[in-house]
Length: 399
Image 1 (cartoon, one colour):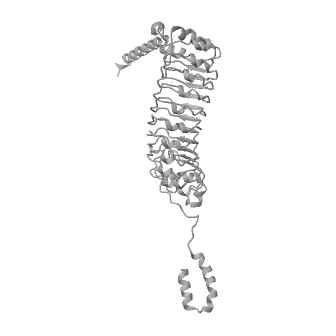
Image 2 (cartoon, rainbow, N blue to C red):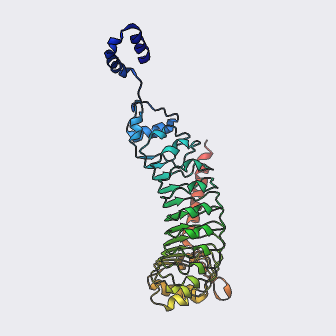
Image 3 (cartoon, rainbow, N blue to C red):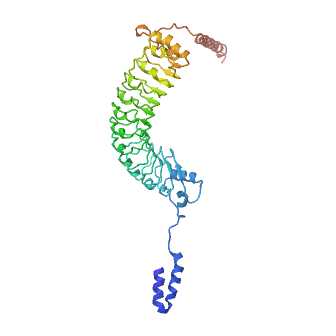
């Protein structure tokens, strides 16, 4: 329009009238289109729109760019969201939780470069390539997906917490690029080789449970570890853990462990889980003076003498169910530990289940007394039945 007016001006006016040109241009400026933050944003997914409106406190009316730009925290858990189109206008987002949905297209999220927290757990994701640009992430949760390739994470140099549990991961090599990690969850994947974890020397918490790990050697130099969960794997040798003196929680259940001697110097432990292994000798465990919980369920322990003879061994609880305790251990020694104030989970439960082992490995037998309450119940049932029969005979013939 400006071009047409100027052309007309040049054709119809003399050169002496050129002083009018700036005024004409100024008057035409308001007629030019310009970007506006009042532009309306379309949100195709009704469930996602409902979450946005709830977050904005705007149940009706248009959702505008300026509205979305002010959102810093957005959570939409289990909201049946399929499409997050429109989220790209949430340019101020710091925290985003979209777990337990089925989002097919994550592309709109890739522009949210200010994100520090992102939860995409349980979304059926097989690829995370689209979130590679989010290099300011500090906490990323991706559990319960179908992820195999971790390469897109290599540029996330600020990431400290990473949850990759319950995926299809077998190759941990890309994690070598993330030495700043403090907490890492890898449980329930397809991992057998944990060599790349040797580079993660800032780790404080690590979960590699329910994998196929047979060798713990790569963990030997992770001296900052305080919590290690390595249950349901295939290792036998605990010597790689012998120098991890900062450990306070250690879960090694369901492996092939026969000896706990290599970890006898981890005296800061407060919780030790060793269930479902092949442990016989408990003497090395008496060094744990700070221990609060000890789980030896389903091992091969038959003698508790080392526990009884050390008066300073006083954890809050010991689980001994499923062990072939001999007669003295199952009665006298368990009672002695209980008198010390220890909650020994064997005596009452084992008695109820008949799980005591006596000499020769035979279960100790307890005389069975016929219970009084069931007998009384049968008598009452019989009286009720007789009453019904008498009533039927008295009134049934009259009908």
